[in-house]
Image (cartoon, rainbow, N blue to C red; front, side, top):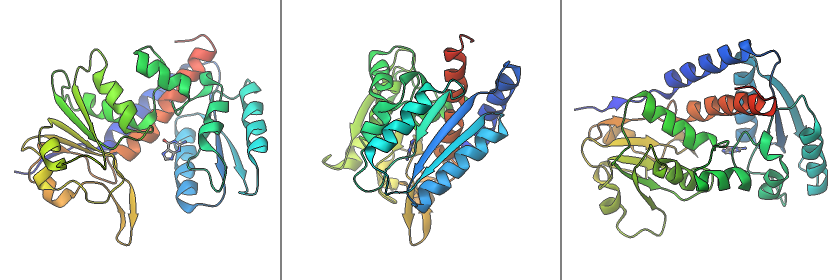
Length: 283
Ligand code: GUN
């Protein structure tokens, strides 16, 4: 039997509609600043998408495009000027940064109140403590997708493949939080006998950046499979899951593209709204 398809494009549209309505009710227009350094085509395409999404929900986009010849000091100065700009509610530095520029240091320069990517150590610390805060967009998009399709996490066994600070680690914390209550395993490139570990999962999240890593043998029949992978190959963009094989085994599965990607972008808008409300004492 073929798995239920978890349609990220459709759920992202629901989130965007919610954000759009909330923005229309505000007495001001939230502003999202994006910083793009260098000429990586993938980064340009991502930021273009984020800015277009912002426009669709009534969020003002403030865009800074910089050559890869800039140095860390100039980048820091730009971020500090955006921190000080009252019309800017959220700041996003598109990662990775080219050359010797330090992405972590750039993110640490962002005012945590404007950290709509949820990647500042302050935001990640709040997540670790289980305190309210801005959450990273991809993990919160995965949680929203599960919630939308009524896929219960309490008492479930969740296995995440990938330990990045963008996805794997923060998602583990979200699934562990009270209310989500999963039992979480984080597997990675050094995990021994990956299929034995992943086939324990009720919820299997592939976030390893390895095209087609997860095959039918990795998946317990009926499990929910979430594909976070975005891999550029000669065959175009492919996920971490061998969709054609796994769709026959899983109970529910995200397509890639059209699964987690649109959710990530939608959660950025939701975070920008939250940051704007929090900064201005609304909501
Ligand atoms: N590059 C890949 N994913 C992300 C993300 O979530 N945020 C930023 N800023 N850059 C990224």
